[in-house]
Image (cartoon, rainbow, N blue to C red; front, top):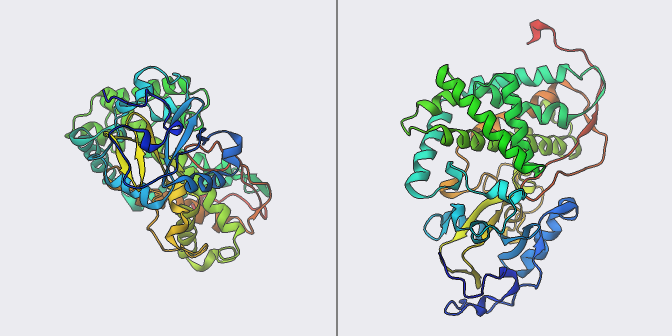
Length: 431
């Protein structure tokens, strides 16, 4: 156990120079007495204002992650990339390094415990254990036929659109953006519909932090049911490929790996579809160019990945001993969240607003050894979903107010109300 000479205080309550034997390489003003919260309605309504206040404190700043749970947040592109590229030699992923959790000071039902607590999958592992689990994931996802995936997304999109296309209006969050990735992943993993719905519903509850303890129990039970099914009846799907991989994942590892892959592919994809559609129908640079080909949609997705990444703050890391970065001392024992949103909006990048189309230097898919293993699959799902609804519903116009989901970890909309010209469902010959 690392000894903390500060007596275990929140890092926001002391200066880097207060740490005996660990003097920062540059003078740094002490952080504020009270770390800024990155949760709650105020933060969710305008997270960028909080990022600006934190960035003024330094490239890494103390925050309150959830009530009574403290840590740090990266505030610049450079600091985010530094941490991600120095894992695992300076920073670790394993939450056993989280002192408050280890000592029982994080409530079991805290959203932070559910989203950041230890799980037996690649996201929380370092070294050979991480490499073993990641090989199983990448090896299985590489078997996905991308052409078949696009066809699957199109068919699911048509099924969903047919259910409301005659109405002339719809909320595209519950009727399109949320169910489409869920239905796609259910098919990729070979889930029966009802079981797949339970899995993704529980994962969504984890992301939103609603009844997190019950959601965690539901995830465990439903994923185990899928594992048992695919051990009995293997098929040509991601679950079976994971089970058959030479990594030899056991049942508990499979439960957590399914959570990782589906969780990383559903709620974030829903957010990206919502945010991408909103950009397409409200930004004059994209509106009206629907029939010019794939490029406008691809450009809109690029801009959203820069300006409103679906995972805003995540990838918790833990300093291996006292680490100093640009005059800031990072104390061991506290989680450091990587803010992809703050990194991508960092003014130091010098990228003018509206000029990021085609630029894929963003960190929305993370970086380093824990980067997203299949960003191309995510883009296929997102871009196909956006293209299909824009092709079928004309003209599509935004008809509501922007209301955000709880924003500590991810960034999305609670509703996306649109109007369009009523149209008939597709005939079977058109599918």
